Image 1 (cartoon, rainbow, N blue to C red):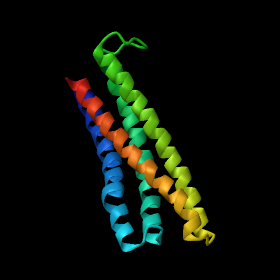
Image 2 (image 1 turned 180 degrees about the vertical axis):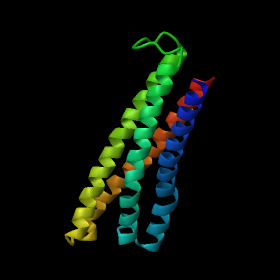
Image 3 (image 1 turned 135 degrees about the horizontal axis):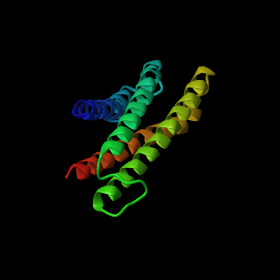
Image 4 (image 1 turned 120 degrees about the horizontal axis):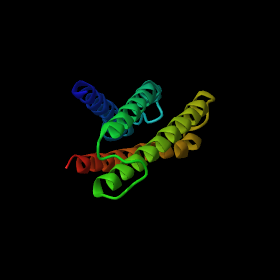
Length: 157
């Protein structure tokens, strides 16, 4: 049983690192560099987003499955009872995960729209508002990930 808990925790952390690391790279490194270079809507940027999306879904599913396993194996967990601080923090963390998934789905849909518009030859002025919305979803996901990491730290204490 010890090994299973260790494996679940390790996979959970790995999924979080891949998901959050990719979000941070996009928001803090790639987008600012491409903005300075004037290549925000370039083929390179769209290619990077397209290649990152499978990692989002792989990471999210890994985090979900291992998170459920860790929750169910924890002796403090009782279904739908929020009697202590640990249960409340776990509930907030679950809400954060659902909201992050909402933004991930929104980002994927928004990117499909942006990519389709660029492929059809739409002007940059017409595509820009959708692209800004895509960037906003990424920034909100980073903030939610930071809040979720804080909640995870509160769960361990």
